[in-house]
Image (cartoon, rainbow, N blue to C red):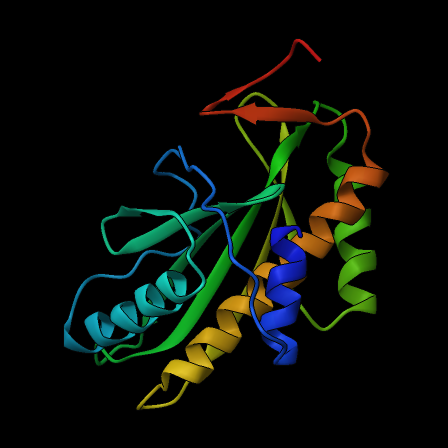
Length: 190
């Protein structure tokens, strides 16, 4: 059973099958927004770790961010603070494991806009690096209120991963010319 099927089963309330951990080797520049550690952030951070541990996910820590890989995407999980330092907002940010070659930014924008017009989750966007390669990103950002519960954190994480993987599956079909990200480098041998 794939990780996507396991996550869908968790959201629907069906029993979870045993999961094999996915090895993660990820650079530190993936997070869309970084949070600093405060008491409130620490509490939300602990809930996120507990949720990931509960799904037997393998993840790395980069400062306060937790980063893991699922099937064809890399995801980071972070708490966003308000001006008073309260961390009530959880952000699940995904990066497709492939990049589009230079000149494909417009096609990526059309793909993202069509997805966003037809789906509630996740928000999809494209970013271009300094060399012209375009990456597809997705986000689910949710205000959990003043006292986030473990169940709500778990639901946001599962929603972010499942919906992000659906985007990346669609991108796989739409962009056969995309290249794998190998560590921090592009695999241009494909």
